[in-house]
Each structure stands twice: as C-alpha cells, then as structure tokens.
Image (cartoon, protein in one colour):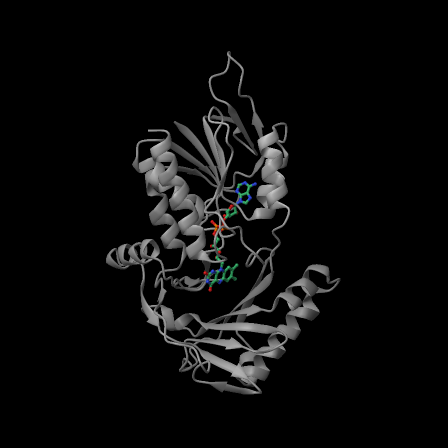
Amino acid sequence: MKIGIIGAGLSGLAAGRVLAGAGHDVVVFEKSRGYGGRMATRRIQREEPIPMDHGAPYLTGTSDAFRSFLSELEEKGLITLWADRFSYYTDGRILPEMPGREPVPYYAAPNGMNTIGKYLGRLFDIYFEEKVGGITHIGGSRIRKSPWMINSSSINVFEADAVIIATPAIQAYGLVATAQDEFDLRKMITVLDDISYTSTVSLMAGYGERNPVDWKAIHCDHPVVSWICNESSKRVSSEEMSLVIHSTDKFARQLVEADDPGELNGKLLKAMGQIMGSWAARPEWHQLHLWRYHFPKKSLDMPFLESQDELAPIALVGDYFQGRSMEAAYLSGLKLGTHWVEKFS
Ligand SMILES: Cc1cc2nc3c(=O)[nH]c(=O)nc-3n(C[C@H](O)[C@H](O)[C@H](O)COP(=O)(O)OP(=O)(O)OC[C@H]3O[C@@H](n4cnc5c(N)ncnc54)[C@H](O)[C@@H]3O)c2cc1C
C-alpha cells in the first residue's frame, strides 16, 4: 500500500517506521527543513557548530513500549542518561530539586534531539520543505486506482492509497477540512475542534567560555520563564556555555500579539538575569523561536483516530492522543502503524 504521511515529527515517523518495516511504500511530507517536528535542534553556526535543542529538551516515559524505544536509542548511542531530577526556582532562590518530586530517568541526545528523527526516518523517503495544502478524496472512481490525492507545494499532486496526518490537532483540522466531503471526515473534524495548545518562546543563548553552572535544568515558578536548560551539560565536548529558556504560555501569547517583539525579547533577558544573576542577561549571542503549539491542553481518550472507510483509509496521530507528551506521540504512531499492518496485511 502506498501511504502518504503528513508530518515528520515523532508520531509520523513512528507510524512510518512500522509500516515501512512491514513492506508498505511510505512517503513523508514535511513542511520544515528537518526531522523531528517539535523534537527540534538548531545548529548555531560557530567555528564548531553548536546543537541547541530548542524544542523538547529530553526524553522520559513510563510505558513498556516507550522504555523499549529508549533502550534501542541508548544502544545505538543516540541518547544517554542525563539527569534524574531538576532544580527549582521559587521565591527568588534556586533549590537543588523540586520538593516532593521522585527521581525519574531523563535521557538527552548528545548530538541533538533531531538525530532521533533522522534515525526513525531512515527506512523511507521524506520530502522536506514540502507543505501539504490539502488532501482530496477521489475514492469511488474506477479510472483512478488510489483513493487519495495529497496536494503539496512543489510535488503538486501525490496519489496515495492511505493518508496519515501526524501534525498538531489544529493543523490536522485544517487539512481534514480540505477533504470534508465525507460524513466520516466531518465527524473527525468535530473531535479535533476541541483541542487547543499552549505556546512557548524558546530563547537560545551562548555565553562563550564562561564556566558552566552546576545544574542541568531549572523548573521556574516565574511569570515569564518556565524552564531553563543547561544545553552544554548534554554535549560530550562543549567549550561554550549555552542555555535554552522556555517562556510561560502567557508571555508567548504576548509575543504573538506584540507590535514590538524586541521589547519582549528584552523582558525575557531581564527575567533570566533576575533568576540566575546579571551575567545571564548579557549573552554573547541569542536567538528566539516561537512555538505556537507547545503542549495540547487536553487529550483524546483513544490511541489514534481513523475513518471507517476501508477503501480510503485516513488516520490522525499525534501527542494529543492518550497523553500530552512525546511518549504519547510515539505510542500513537506506533499503535496506528501496528494496527494498519494487521488490517492491511
Ligand atoms: C519547547 C518545547 C518543549 C517541550 N518539552 C517537552 C517535554 O519536556 N516533554 C515532553 O514529553 N514533550 C515536550 N514537548 C512536546 C513534544 O515535543 C511533542 O509532544 C511531540 O514532539 C509531538 O510530536 P508530534 O509528532 O505529535 O507532532 P510534531 O512534533 O509537532 O510534528 C508535526 C510535524 O508536522 C509538520 N507539519 C505540520 N503541518 C504540515 C503540513 N501542512 N505539511 C507538511 N508538514 C506539516 C510540522 O512541521 C512538524 O514537523 C515540548 C515541545 C516544545 C515545542
């Protein structure tokens, strides 16, 4: 079966890997330039490029299936155990850990989180910088064999026997709406309508050869900053001290609406100075990235959503199924992939 997957994030790649492994012909369309979706890494151009995980910073999970995936990644040398607790900023002080939190194994990717996406995507073709604008249901026609057409920016039209939409729910809503001539698809839209997301701003900052701080990351109880990650502590050789800061949802929304984003940028740096000391407000370089979709505010109580039309299969996967995390995204893709391997064997 020729399967078109929209989105090269963890859920789409997990589904693609299972289906391609079972012999299906999988092609992934990804609007950005790289693997991993929100599990993203930006390489800052210096003499030695510095990987900065400006999306999800680490991996952790509790289910057997996700733990077995983590073991696989560890065996391949893609992730290593990084920390079992994080510091906590509250009432103007950085505490070594958050009171009442049990230790948990957190894994980091020394060469960047997007190396995981690259590993998952090695069995099939991925078209990068290929934004899908819509999908067309052409099932029922006896002239055409494939029931779906995927319309993307430069390939124009790609015919597929089945489609998987592996994007945040809001983007999935827009895509399903383009093919909304079927009763089944209208039902899908109604379910998606209920999912919204928090946003965040990631600020990547470098401080030259300043001695690294002694913490790995800090959860912050602060109106502007929610999380600070010591990126240098994840890298095998890191001459340069670098941090990634995530803003609160409220701050990110101000940035979306701001007339002058520069002013808010200054506020974020000032907040870092407040938390860590004045040195933190004066990085040698910094870059911002706005994530409109950070975490889903609620999730659906099912592993994936698929249409009942067996002649024109279409399904949705992502982190908004049975959780709100990378683990949920992986399990959603894995479960749909396994289900379709059985169903269409
Ligand atoms: C800053 C940040 C911090 C996070 N921290 C954590 C954390 O600590 N723990 C945790 O569990 N999770 C965390 N997350 C969330 C986690 O990254 C996501 O839950 C998970 O990666 C989602 O995977 P996904 O496959 O569902 O979606 P995504 O990763 O969003 O993948 C969807 C892909 O679809 C592509 N796409 C969208 N529309 C189209 C289109 N029309 N055509 C083609 N391609 C399209 C996108 O470019 C993207 O690559 C964090 C996220 C962010 C942004």
